[in-house]
Length: 321
Image 1 (tube, rainbow, N blue to C red):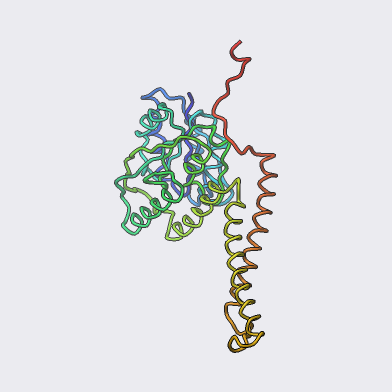
Image 2 (image 1 turned 180 degrees about the vertical axis):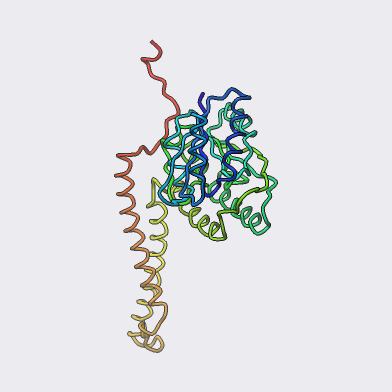
């Protein structure tokens, strides 16, 4: 078994040598066949020079350098595409993840899990990062059904075949376990030590949580309705259109009755707000239904290229003869 360790790097020149040394110690102690892939996400310091030096000293070290900062999801995706190992681990480059945890991750993978996600049970972060993070993790677990305590933890372990079925873009890197679970892969978690930051500063601010919540709704839609978008948009569209039709029918009825005489004052529909609401609901429902049909056409075309299912193993007659 070969282990690939993918490490996104952005302005981490002070920590890379020590991180490599710790990984090397763990690998030698456990006799791991390992490759380390540093992905320099447009660093402005000497991070790439350090990676080049490490690669000269250790042929197990590989590097990928972006022309500019494309984000962590892009860096991970590039690392996953380059990884040759049966098992792929991800770690942050800031030394807050401890390589000595690697053997326990692999032990859990040996039990049949396809993804093992780290859980920073005790965090060395300020409260204004910890509290929103816990709320976010609770929302992700509730909306997706994948019950993990720490979806944001950078230390995770995957089987290589997962990335033949999942591609990352935007900020979806934190949702790989959710996307994997939606394809039928088994997901677990492990408590990991969260070491205090020694160099540099955090690369994430408050906007991280805003982007995270927007991405959460994207993942919720992809995993729940990616193969049947009309089930969501069509349902909402039918409800909206039916409600709008009911309102307009009611208004038309009372307008007609008022014109017959003896049923109160004449009704002027253009002066009633309900008329606007009814028309708006009817148009909104029709638009959603139309969008649902277009989405279904796109999904049907996509399924001709990408499989809508995931095969774990095959048993064929030729194999038993």
